[in-house]
Length: 269
Image (tube, rainbow, N blue to C red; front, side, top):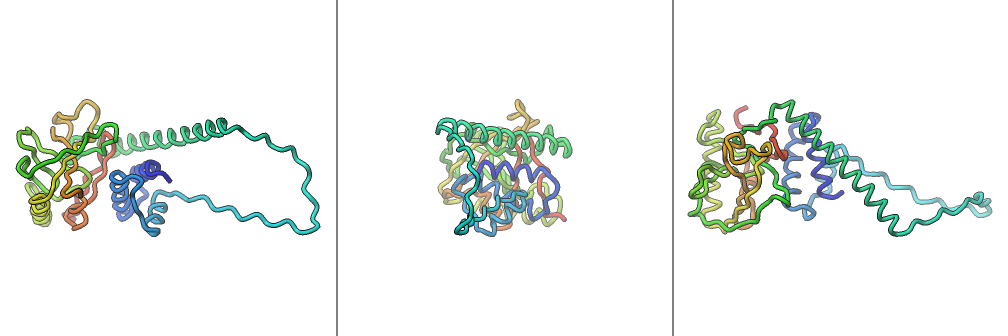
């Protein structure tokens, strides 16, 4: 299955309500990896099996090998031979089927996203933690960044020098250190912020800006992410969000193109 097909099926599954909490976190992690690495994403057999189970995909069963005809058996009745299609006709038929399948998946994702946004009240997402998965057509190039060119606001937010608003780092959600909802979140938020400072202290840094997941025409305004921009920060070639998630200082957070699901905050349960 192609990476784009997998990502589409994962988004459809995330938009539903049949997943367990573990399956939802697992699919979010796989979606982030597919978004970053595409066809180079590596999964173990067990991970692939769990992925197919979570998205409800059943691979086609292999056909049984043809049985040899017993000696002396009568031949089957004569049937007219099918006329072979030309390579051009076969190619056109294949492209038509692929177009119909891709269009159907895209339509399902759009409808599922609209329904989910309507049910969760995120159609006009003013969340302070919203972000978008940037598409190859809209992503900007990765640019070098020095430690003196930004300050760290929180475990998932930085502020570029001279910028009026901060930049929300995408792909994960770190606990709040400035206005935590509980003491445990505040403690973990301070640890995540300190760890981010360690990661960027001496590493080679790069920043990739991506569109925030907001309704069209609202990006850059207070109606979209409180006016903040969105991007990915890399330290020595590795996304800092992946490091914080792997160390238990953040959780994966995947949004749709123009809205986000409820922000995951498992620290104050």
